Image 1: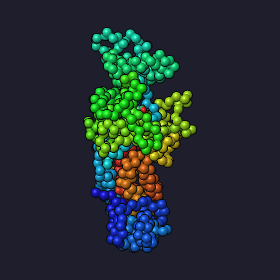
Image 2: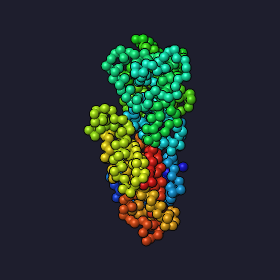
Image 3: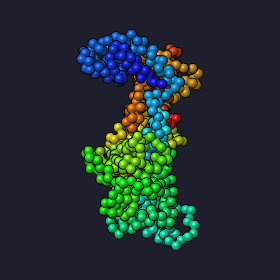
Image 4: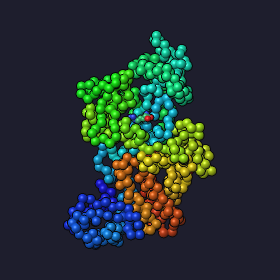
Amino acid sequence: MKSFLSKMENKIKNVIIELGYEIENVELIPSSRKEFGDFQYNGVMAIAKKIGKNPRDIATEISDKLNELEEFTNVNIAGPGFINITFTNESLKDYVNELNSDINISYEYDNPKTIFLDYGGANVAKALHVGHLRSANIGEALKRLANALGNKTISDVHLGDWGRPLGLVILEIKKRHPELCYFDDSFDGEYPEKSPVTNEDLMEIYPTASTKAKEDEAYLEEAREVTKALQEGHKGYNELWKKIMEVSSTDIGKTYDRLNATFDLWEGESDCYKVIPEMMEYINKLNITRESEGAIVIDVAREDDKVEYPPMMLVKSNGGASYQTTDLAGIFDRVRRFNPDEIWYITDSRQALHFETVFRAARKAGIVKENIVLENDGFGTMNGADGKPFKTRDGGVMQLNDLIDMVVSECEKKLLPNIVEDRQEIAEMVGVAAVKYADLIPYRSTDYSFDPVKFSDLNGKTAPYLLYSTIRMKSLLKKAKETGIDYKNVEVIDENTKEIVLNLLSINKVVVKSFNSRSLNEITELLYKLTNSYNNFYSSVRVLTEENEVNKKSWLALTKIVYDNNIKLLDILGIKVPDRM
Ligand code: ARG
């Protein structure tokens, strides 16, 4: 099935072919000057150039033919041969009523795949920070978008749960409580059920240990040893590690719940670590590694590289695994377990070199077949209002929950005064929506500034504006129902409502474009435009007291369509809509 816009593009294409011109495809773009037409077709110049004919002559032939078709009206030519196209209200009406019964986002996409998404990436025993926010928001929305288009997805939170930070935390606990059974090598009883540390403890322990390691070489060396022993299976350390994992991932889970991010797999670097021996057995049969200063590496540089690619570190000189090794093992494991067509990593753009190195090694080792797509979809940073990387007032790293709280409390101030009982709950929903929407507005790789006041504004390109408007649509529909107004189809499309319909018309294409660019900015923009066009209409009429019954019912039917689409698009962004605010 194809969307209305595609069908119209096809009609135009057929007209052009019938006139005897060669053409691959026709793309209609929304007109920049609405007074000349709804959409524009700019392909005539290319056709004319190819055959050495005057573009205006060809444009005239095409527009004459189009004017004869029932779907088009007032087709006219501008400049050297731009064709302006307006759809008849009659044809738009049919289209919009089709939407009434079926909002199918996937009309323009017919290439379903199995996509493995690696996002979230929180680090165990450490607080989530701003960088993790973007991964959760963008990753979650991309997953929902992929699903809405009919792809199959598998999502993994890929926790940073292995390596030095865990060694540091265990060492610091050991220093404070050497008497604990985890540190008694002769202990052979049952390890206690209860964790010796809470999440609050961990939030203090890790920074302390990390600072000590920076200042004290001996401490750092000890941490290296603990890390190595942990990875080599030291029983007590591993039991303690499990406890740390339990308390920390419960807390991490709460933050992801807050952000409405859910994962099929709750795995991490430690799971990849387990796969390393098997992967090494496989790699060792190939002739692709070499020794370098005690380490084992895979060269990944290519002759035409513009930047220098250091080799991939497979085994460090101390025998340990690197961040690169666990990610390579991750690919090894994911390919055989899930047979994905594509694997996407949604991380900060600054990890680009890391992933490109790992991807090259994976291809060189034949761990992935050529046709499997490996992608690092990098995102820009969120800065403070001063345009510099975000910091707390005392210069520390801002914790994710504190940052969300700031926006929630701004949003709370703007809720209706009569919301009392569930005020905090609603503020939370609106605040999280505000954070998420603001995070998805810029193109994925663009940096942006954190601005709680702007994000929570009830007017402008913000979630509160969208939510408020969507709730108003819902309550209008509810009132209509209570008054017993029975509406069904859109019967009138006029000056007031046409802009809304044109925005609805773009949805199918926009979602596919957004999917293809792995960026949600086009969807956030469309949601705003659609809502705005609806609000312009809403403020120019009085729906429920309208005397003309046909108008009234038609407007309600259109309201329902806009409402349903808003809900659907907000859901793709991972945004929930409260009942009131
Ligand atoms: N834990 C990492 C960090 O905080 C992000 C993990 C990204 N995913 C991956 N497979 N490396 O930077």
